[in-house]
Image (cartoon, rainbow, N blue to C red; front, top):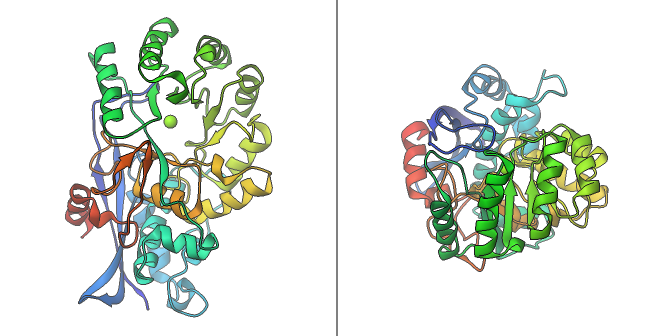
Length: 387
Ligand code: MG
């Protein structure tokens, strides 16, 4: 069993939306195909992967470092002990050969895209949906048949007023979502509070999460926390710079509502530092590491072990990214849930076409591997780029 080809390409996910920090008019992602010599129905089994939104495509790192290392590796060094399947952790180690520790940044994004394709391939070779494969091999056969999902929405875009924000949120409710998220921090506090209160009046504060995308300094984060406190929100996401653990800790001492953060932490070590130094409260707060930005599912399995060793429940982990990998992981590893992108970052955002959302819960479905073939518009684009 060997890998016969690895292809990568850059896909555009350009849109007019913006959050408190960036606009997405130039946003790209890397798409990867990992082809094997395993034949099924007359075709070579191939795994597909991509990186999450927000950090751009990583073709340079893929082409110049990661893919050549895998190509140069002994076949056996990429396999599990009994030679029945590829070993994602060994392939990750090959990719990371001669890479210094720390830093992470774009490298963790490139590794994550390739790692996603490897896991898709591994589950396909096992003839299983990835969530079932994870349940069988990493979770004692346990799984959730329905997963809490929430749409990451409420973006700013030119000319969008309160009426359109309200309509957007009602549309998510019509699609079956319960907890909804909106962006904050893109306009002054008094204007933002009108947006937040408009949505809280509509759906109730307990089902509303807000996301500042790391925009605030401590005094602004505290001011928002004070203003939003009476609304008893579902969570307050990324109040300050993702690496300012002291700010997070200072805010958590004042703000009694839930805080969620971690989508811009890219490694096990960064996540551990958040838990050590960020004042995060295990009974209340949420960790949002995105496997498709942070060295992949392979690293995430170690993150699950780490949080449990530090006295946290894996139910406090809700991956960022709104992609099918996160849904499969949440189901098979019994995490707290998954973000969802029903309307943004298309065609890559969101789940398989036949996934039904009801009461804020999604069933992962029985598609082979990650199930990208069951998301028609996205798979057409993947085929065009790396098929
Ligand atoms: Mg966020």
